Length: 148
Image 1 (tube, rainbow, N blue to C red):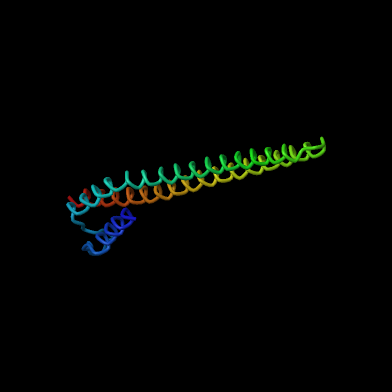
Image 2 (image 1 turned 45 degrees about the vertical axis):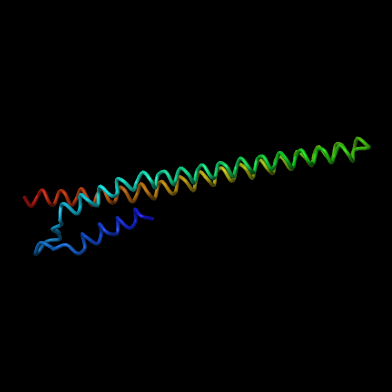
């Protein structure tokens, strides 16, 4: 992931920058920090787009699973009609079809929930990373302002 590479570069810049004696403060090249921040701003929308793509793909999978369930249900209904010679056979076929549909709907709900949780987890991690970077940048800028 390119964003992580840029974040690592920012971290390396901070770690390798000169230190102010007897403090925890670091002197960093303002131009390099601003350049890295610009790169983060350009990369971030791409990562968000990728996360949206993941959600869309999950939605497609759920839709396909639902269609497959409908196809299976329709096939079960057709087979039940062909074999139905007595009312008991018809009743059993209806119960089986309803059971299959219920299971397919449950699977579709689980897939949908899993996709949403995955996307939310991905976005939450991204948000956490961004908040950490923002705090570090704000702290660095505050330290830079304090040195003027």
